[in-house]
Structures are given as structure tokens and as C-alpha cells.
Length: 114
Length: 117
Image (cartoon, rainbow over all chains, first blue to last red; front, side):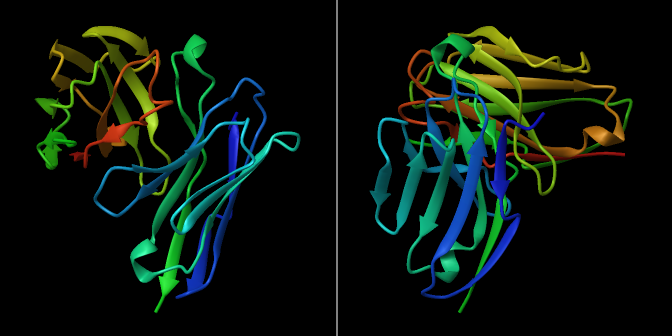
């Protein structure tokens, strides 16, 4: 059973536009929510992460919004650039008691057109 | 040095072969991981080592055998693999299970693209 559902599966956005990726989870024990960016032929790289006591976190053009009551979180990429074209994975971790195992969403392939 | 180095980058092997994947990090991380990633899918956790001891085995078939010779090295020994084992094998490290990947995140290598014929 997939514990973190990610949508959309793919996304095409014009340069300068906003890319929005959504994730929903079911396990209320999750308390750490990172986003990873993966380019072809490379491993995933941590992009930004948030904890449930914060509703929003911004780092440069990347913003995470978190809605604890709805058990949803999203990634917004502002002023999208062709170099942002990659696959993005949301993830969730239940904490030390479960060995800090990450559960990944299914991934979103983002293509930014020049 | 903030890199996780994996060798080889590509590997083709027959079903009767024995091969090994290697991973190295020099960030002082005490937790190391093996993940398997199929095309267009998220990484799937296989094994976790904490302080050079196997901490998690996600019910991986015995044809995959991990080894952690020291805190900087992680190997994955492969024997009698099946074509469906073809995938990208990713190594990752983090500061330690008690704090990371929650604080500093996982650092992934670029992976070994494995093809089993």
C-alpha cells in the first residue's frame, strides 16, 4: 500500500511559470517531509524539507506548503527554469522509532520549456 | 568532500555471474544505505547499516548480500541474479539513524546501472 501519494505524474511548464506538485499521506506518525530532485543518470538530491510544526518553508525559488489537518504537502517552484527539468520525489519519515525510514511518493517528471 | 562515490557506473552480468557494487563516502556519516530504483519509479530501500552493523533488511532476496567493511565503505555482492533485478542501484549515507535523514537528509551516489542478461 502506497503511503505517500504524489501528483501529477508529469508536468510541463513554460519558463518563468510556477510548477506545483502535491503529496498526500495517511500515516499520522510521519513527522519529517523532504523533497528530492533527481536528474537523469544521477541519484536523488535533497532539495528542501519541512516538519509538521511549520506551515510553510521557502528556500530560494522553492517553497513547501504543509497542511497537517489535511495530511497534505506541496512543492512550488517559482520562476521555473529549464535547468529545473528533473524528477521530483516527495517523501515522509516516521521518526527515530521506525529507523527514520523514508517513504517516497511516486515521483513527478517536470519539463520546463524555454 | 560531500560526495558518495559508487563504482562501477554501469554493469552487465549474466545470471550465473558474481559481481560486487562498491560505495564510498568520506563525510564521517555513520549510516549507509542501499536502494534499488526501477525506471520511472521511486527508490526502494533494501538495506541500512548503522555503525557498520546491519540495521534494516527489507526482506531482500539472499542473492543480494551487503557488506560494510568499515564506516566509509559499503559493498553489495550479487550472485545468481535474475533479469528482473536489472535496475539502478543507489548507495546513500546520512549522519546517523538517530538524527538523520531527518536533519541533514540522505546523500545519494549517482548509482550503478545494472543489467542482468
